[in-house]
Length: 450
Ligand code: PLZ
Image (cartoon, rainbow, N blue to C red; front, side, top):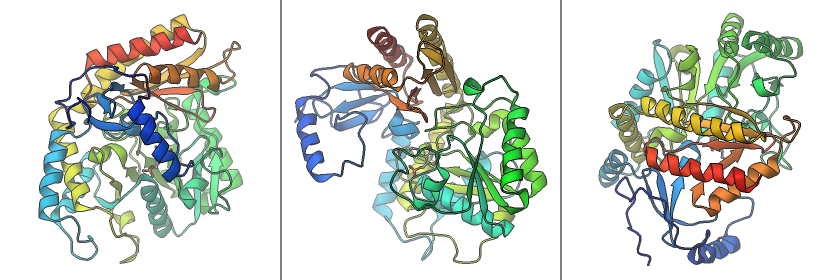
């Protein structure tokens, strides 16, 4: 095998070290097998096969150590194979791996629900349903909102991403690659404008943007038909768009007055990523239901809907569930991840990372007019890349910058409706030294592609 350590976790040398071109020969061999055996529909950002990961690095099968600025799309916030996650998951695996919570329950599931009741916004009585994936959490939030209100319509916003299942495809905005050719989609899903400060034709306040959203929904759907408004407090796949101040609070006020369930999709923003436990916390917004996944369990598949107890109980007995939802090993991992977030004050660490990254991105923006906007919160930062007019999306440049980073051993992601946003989601367990080196590479990538 290679001379790299076989075990991941924070003990891995926290360094960028390239011993072959990226991807190396072993990764290329593995990628050939993948090509034969896995459909092309499953995309690949960077074709290196991983052998171990931890802290802020990924080590590939060729022995290259790469700086991770992606966290597997905002999942390994506590770091890959974080000690508390590994210990609890291993211990639980030895005791039992599955019973199905609907057949014979176990404490780990209820422990996670207790943590979520404590951590999610608001101090009302809460209950939690556990599931396997983010899309499944969003689907179930809609089921609960419909059962509670007796209404069917679902409101979502422009640029939203909520998943790849049939209902969540309907709720997701972007056609290619998420929806193209996969219809017909679930009905009764209505889309309204979002607050997207960089792309407003003229500057408008958050309240004005909210009135525009509300106007479309009231006139085109009717508030009395709406079961819920589902919204990411900061758009994830749609481009890391932070709505103007006041946008979310006004939507909270309107949904409350109209008997519409406000669902905050915190699947990407949740669990310390934005510098607070949840992105809604920054504006003091208390949603009725919150969907979580990704960062919740340090890499294990777990998702949740947490919400007002009376809404969660609107569904009849047996109406919610699934074979694996709240799997005991995933719950144990989540308890380890949450313990790590509390013990290490990861919301504060995310704010520190945000300050460091924000400074680096501002310096790149000063030098390169192609940077139209720098935005984000905490350890969820992005730059939107545009053409000479300061406005036209330039996806090709974003792709070129990202490809340059990959060649240099830095894992970066793009996103956005126009594919022109470079987004940065480092593990909160990373080091300042790795971040500094990682953003040196990002800066050099801008110079090299100018
Ligand atoms: N809601 C806000 O960010 C997942 C998608 C990756 P699942 N985002 C990553 C891809 O291309 O499939 C996401 C999200 C928000 C819902 C989801 C869906 O979560 O766990 O991927 O189903």
